[in-house]
Image (cartoon, rainbow, N blue to C red; front, side, top):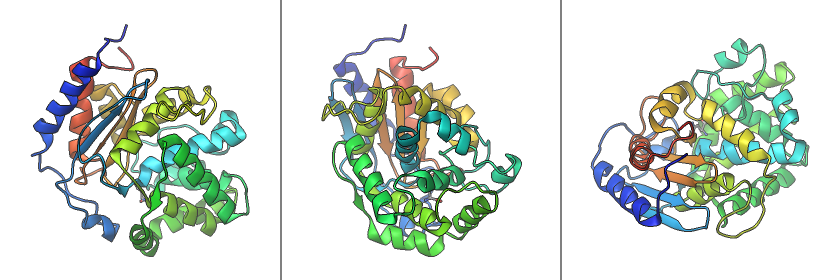
Amino acid sequence: MMQQFDTQQMNEAVNEAYEKFRGDDGGKNADYIPFLANVPSQLFGISVCLPDGEIVEAGDTDYVFGVESVSKVPTAILAMEQYGPDTVLDQIGADATGLPFNSIMAILLENDHPSTPLVNAGAIAACSMVKPVGDASGKWKAITDFLEKLCGSPLVLQDELYKSESETNFNNRSIAWLLKNYDRIYDDPDMSLDIYTRQCSMGVTARQLSICGGTIANRGVNPVTHERVFDAAITPKIVSMIATVGFYEHTGDWIFSSGIPAKTGVGGGIVGVLPGVMGIAAFSPKLDGSGNSVRAQHAIKYITNKLGLNLFG
Ligand SMILES: NC(=O)CC[C@H](N)C(=O)O
């Protein structure tokens, strides 16, 4: 049985993690998207959303940062909600790539398959699947409405980030058109890529991300608003995807040492999900060589290990 904890113990663990790692200066901001290079790198926040909607937090949990690849999780859930998990498995897949998030090689090695909605190729394919197909503004509304329900409050597009990323996303343009070559994109490639780039540029806070994780942990019911956001049967599907590829080529090391499925983004955010137990998010801009926030990783690992929280425990 998983160790039980009370709110006080979680509060202590969160504050200890914050104090312990706030001075850690390892890593550096993402700079391949110019906007991200200029985000103040000392920012650090940790937020936990418990099944009763209680939030336990420390640090800069109100700071709005770029959600980036964490946005792949909501869109994957939306595609599964619209089509059913088996169709998403068939059209995109659920395989770990073992390669970096933006790997073109992964598409070639997987025999033309985008692998999973949680890497760039699969996320662009997921955006192409979102209904209404062929209608960019309808798709965008579906995605942003869904994000708002998952997080319990609206997210706002960071225009400058969107501009910065759109001007420099040459690798992703190649991915979108390679998918077209293999018939693995299900709407216009440029439009699907633009939707993907825009969703990555949404601003989010660590608190909102923890509520998003809490909604997944709570089997589709937002623990704060009490609204049912998606079908309960999708939780094990999305958590399995997060567990297998949430940290890309370092997913095995991550899950081995933290015990919690988690998804990272180059904006510095990480969201972790333990079904029935909690959603946890941490944010700090400095990243390791694979694009994962250094302080956020330390903080989440510290908390799960301290409280004996482990998916496999
Ligand atoms: N790992 C990430 O957060 C990458 C997201 C970024 N928008 C990209 O496509 O490169």
